[in-house]
Structures are given as C-alpha cells and as structure tokens.
Amino acid sequence: MDVSGDALVKRTNATAYPPGEVAFNGSSKLDDASLYFLLKEWAFHTSNTNLKMFLIPPVVCLLAGVLIIPTILFVIFSRFSIRQETRYILLGNALLSDLTYLLFYALLAALNAAHVHLPKEACVLLLFLLAVAYCGGLFTAAAIVLDTYIAVLFPLRYIAILPPSRTKKLIVLLWMCSGAFPGIFFLVLSSTHSFVPCLLEMCSVPVILILTLNGTGTMKLCFWLSTIVIFLCLSLIFCCYAMLYFKTKRSGIWESICSRASVTFLMHNTVLFFYFFPLLALFVESLLCINVLIRLQTGIQVSLTVCNVLMILPKVLFPFLYGLRYREISASLRSMVRRKRLRLVLPAPSPS
Figure 1 (tube, helix red, strand yellow):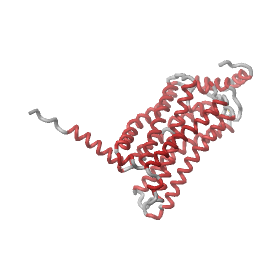
Figure 2 (cartoon, one colour; figure 1 turned 90 degrees about the vertical axis):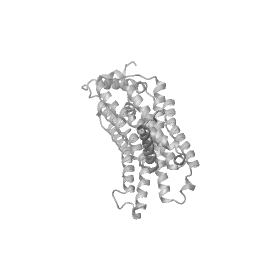
Figure 3 (cartoon, one colour; figure 1 turned 60 degrees about the vertical axis):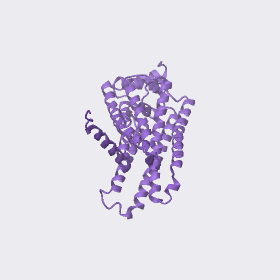
Figure 4 (cartoon, one colour; figure 1 turned 90 degrees about the horizontal axis):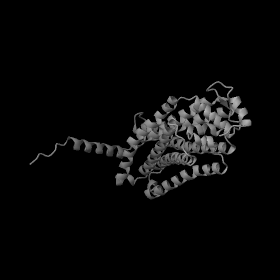
C-alpha cells in the first residue's frame, strides 16, 4: 500500500512517538494508509514470543474442549432417552457451537502467530464463521436459561410448551438467526467498502476490534449494534436467573450453601460472569479509545487478552459446569468408564 499526501504527514506525526508509544484517537478518522502504518508499527515492536504466548490459552482451551465436548455429545446422541429431552438437545447444540468457535479461533490465532497472510475472501469467511459460532453459543445459552425458567415456574405445562419437536425447530431458528445477524453486518460492511484492506491483511480479531473504532461510521455502528445485542442477550439471561432465585427463595432449596440448587446456581452465575466480563472490558476499552489518547500497543494488548483468554474461557468452562452437572450424563460417563475398565482387567480366555 502506497503512503502519500496527507498519509505521509500522519506517518511523520506517528514516528514522533517513541517505539511502542504510537497513539491514536478513536474520534479521528484514519485512512487506509494510516491504519496500515499503525499496524506495521505495532507488529514491528511486538516480539514473536509475545504473540506466541497469547497462542497458548486458545490451544489449551481447544485441547480441553476436544477432550470433553465430543464425549458429552456422544452420550447425548447415543442415548435415545437423553436426546429426547429438551434440555439435553439445547445443551448439545450449545456444546457444538462452542467447539466450533474454539476450533476456528485457535486456527486463526495459530495463523497469526505464524505470520500467515490469508486471502481477503478466506479472512472474511473465517471471521463470518467465528461470528456465527459465537452467536449460536450465546443464543443457545439464552434458550437454556429460558428452558430452565419455564421448567421451574411452569412444571405442569412444560412438556406442552417445549416438546422435543418444537425444540428442534427452535434450534433451526437459532442457527438461522446466528447466520443472519452477522451476515447482515458483513453485507453492510462489504457494500459500503468498510472492510479496510490492512485490517484483512492482519486477519486477527483483537486487531480488528481495536481498529474498528478508528474506521468509518458504518464500522463503528456495526460494532455498537453488535455490543448492544450481546448485552441484551446476557441481560435476559441475568434477569431469568434473578427471577428464578426470588420466586424459589421460599421453597427451602436455598437453605444449605452446599445444596444442589445453590451449587448449580453458583456455577451458572460463574459462567455468566465470564460471558459478561470480557464484554465489559471491551466496552471500557472502547470508551478509552474514543475519549482518550492511548497507545496502540496498549489497546491491542488489552484486546489480545480479552479475545485470547477471557472470551474463550466460558467456552471451555461450559461443558464442565453445565454438562457434567446433569445426573444422566455423568452416570452414563461413569458406566462407560466402568465397562472400559472391566474389559481391561478381564483375563483372556485360556486355550482349550
């Protein structure tokens, strides 16, 4: 990309900062050349070791997810009695979305750490699939909470409200919404030519997030609309949990701190916290980008921490805190382990 005219002035101003101290203001409009130079400046002063350190959390979370998620999915889909229940169908869909997100994000992080430049079309496709998987997991988590809310407060009408056939249609609707929601944004960005070439050259979610606020008005609008939708979903989940707590407070299930209801409620809120906190961190960072001059390196380091650690952590916590809490799934897993041990310890038949 050629740098000329006003871009050269901006480049000269940027070089006035010491290495690693390049600053930017989210309220200013930067052209493609300026963004490209800022990215090159950040990449030059960021060591390969630092980037590879941020690769460790996605890889570790992916390994943990690959070990536990397919096992739980196998139990759900191999047991007829389990896969006919609404809560397990929704759980399987959430686990499938999380595993897909972990796979694509770890792949993208590995490509960035290896400095592999993807073609524009491949980068857009990978980002779209990441957005679909994230939205699918988020929307399914909201559906799980609504399912729990209906099961607890309307137990006699629960089967009539959410039978397995209707649940399968709900999952199809969730995936359609998960594809349509990011699809509309990507079409808008593509039609307005807001996909800046230098952003796609470094096909990195943290870099794209931090520089979106320096892009066109369309990019900023898509960013804030996405943030609002995600916060609305998480607020719905939080409100359902709060209503469940207050409406069952007098039932006596909360008297013991170690009761199953208390522990389950604590685990649900732990996962909810790990969903909320990364978005809160990105929101605060966005406000700093808009109102305060901050270093580019600082902004991208925060984005790397949020995206590579905080946003993928609930994806790997979900199967452990949700899936293994169900008695039917844990009992099936224990029976599978016992049968495997019996096959290992049984002596071979003696020759006749």
